[in-house]
Length: 318
Figure (spheres, rainbow, N blue to C red):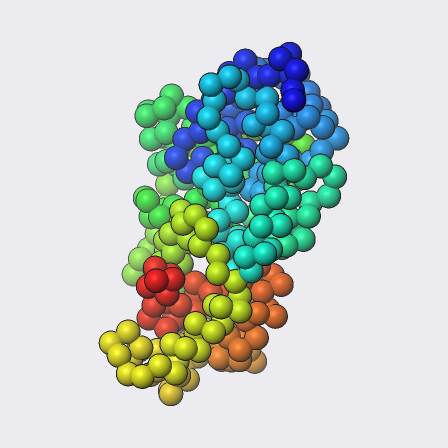
């Protein structure tokens, strides 16, 4: 039980699509902590603990120091204010349980990052923002904030406004040390850069980003890599139906991923499938369970191949 003196005097209301990191950054900004050490001491209970912006830990501690009357729970934060629903989509259920518990209780070692690999760190170097979202947030709420849907690995697109996301001045390395509010990090908002949807690859990336948002907003979607693999091959072998016609055509004709996606998509996602790239997707499906050691990468490729087969994550998950 926390002492009354340890309790926060108030807690900002988390907004839709807001990272928990952003909520805590707004609190830290309001309280004007003199050092990052003080931030971590108060909000994490461990001044030596690194901050993780996308998959935070010690969330049970945070809920224990919330002001009386706050109804927030650790699972609520994990589901609605972290990237966990996206990264866990291809995890086996038992791994999801272990990773979730690690985020609630983690003190010394990032066990949840053993279960959920850090593909994000390879594809995101800075916290990102949409210039139009930034301006709308300020007009609507009086301040800007860091959005969950702006921080998928490799997919630097705002699906709402169909513009490219911009890098802030806050590096992912810096987020390990302190909570930085969006407005403090973005003194001047740059002009929005609209997507050129006449470009096949850009249009494909937008579709992938929209699918990623769908996954992020679905709680408890995880079904595990083995079941995903079995479901793919069931689709390839089931008797003829409207749902399976397109899939069976791909199976019989074996086109390459490059027939649907160009080099821009592969380079953006950092993917190399088969030899040459994009040609051996059926073999990749057969090895999906083993390949899922890179969990967030598996989610991205899963979405990529679903669209390649003419499916969406919604009808695949039904």
